[in-house]
Amino acid sequence: MSKSVRLLLVDDHPIVRTGLRMLFQSEPDMVVVGEVNGGEEALEAVQTLHPDVVIMDVAMPGMNGI
Image (cartoon, rainbow, N blue to C red; front, side, top):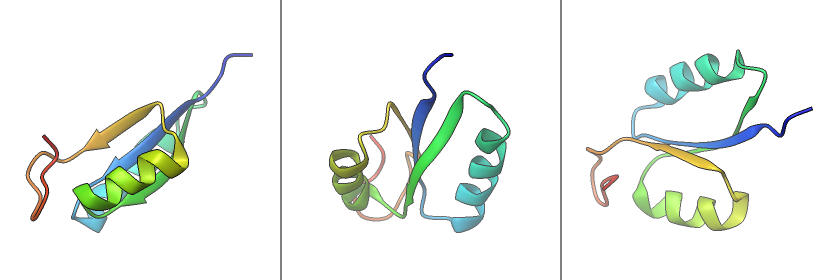
């Protein structure tokens, strides 16, 4: 059995995060470990949740995704 890819979703639009979560939840080898609103929250979440991949919006208020 292969290890699931742990994903963190970062976007300032809740509807986008919801859509991405629904998309990734349908994949058996992917698990969404967290969702946050922006860059500052993402930095904290990465240290806490230890995702394998961060899916991040590049155009957010405050700290962007770049």
